[in-house]
Amino acid sequence: MVIRALPLVKNFDRDIVYLICGEGKDRPRLGKIVGDCQVKDNNLFVGVVTEDQKVLFFDVCDIFIQPSRRAGSRVEGFGITFLEAAIRRKPIIAGNHGGVPEAVWDETTGLLVNPTNPKEIAGAIIKLLKDEAAATKLGERARERCLQEFNGTMVAEKFIRLLEK
Image: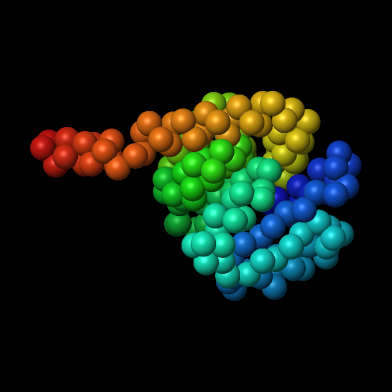
């Protein structure tokens, strides 16, 4: 859906580049969508990324986008990659679906979008590109929340309380 949103974003920023990390059976299908949407120059398929490389990609990106959506009976759970982006101070655009709203708080630590609506995804991207201060604030809040609520001590305390019940 992000690829389908890029033609709209290009009207605002012709130089935008969407890095797609990972490899899988959908790669040929995604390549076809890139061609159909005429955004070949705006997409970079990175392939398999190691844990060390993942940090580098978080550091170079301006926005972390993962509009997960239901795939048959599969539903996105909490989404640990949102926390990985948050700890690196990245504003997040995520699909308002499954357990994602527990990881990304709309308008507080990121933006939640309809994950099947390219126009809404494009609007969120443009909003963050237009307002760098707001994007920075989302990234800072995301990191603060991550440090406060998902540090080892807090997670252990929550786990112990759960076990006690």
